Length: 181
Ligand code: PRP
Ligand code: MN
Ligand code: MG
Image (tube, rainbow, N blue to C red):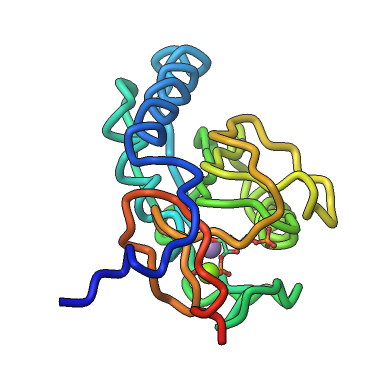
């Protein structure tokens, strides 16, 4: 049987390393919010894995909502064009909101989203991202919770895709060059 792990070049983070870091970030969020109810807003599709794991690692009362935004399409480069494919289902007025992302690359997606969400009157608004590529930033985004800063390489797994594939890998890894051709 074919196995998607055969397409991997180099594993950057194992599922255990990811889980350990999520537990640390969850404890930090619990301490910072000190009993307040939190609304986690996940950005589909990439954030599904971190949304599921982060909230189960937290002890706070957590609710969830989702937005679907796409800037990448099928390639490996950000187009810079952000489209809202699915809007929030809940009102943000007076809520403590944390936007949850799998990765911040150029920052264009979250920069757009944060302006949009701030205009909806949340009591507070922060970002948690599992990964961030500091060398790829094209715009400054104020991020309170970061899992790992990573090099500017294309990585897949734990929700991160290449052409909608590889999201279901438990580890985060680079792909062999022949996968792209
Ligand atoms: C990816 C990733 C972030 C965004 C980061 O989403 O999940 O949402 O790109 O890139 P940026 O910082 O350069 O804007 P994508 O648009 O690929 O959609 P997906 O989550 O469905 O994969
Ligand atoms: Mn995404
Ligand atoms: Mg993507």
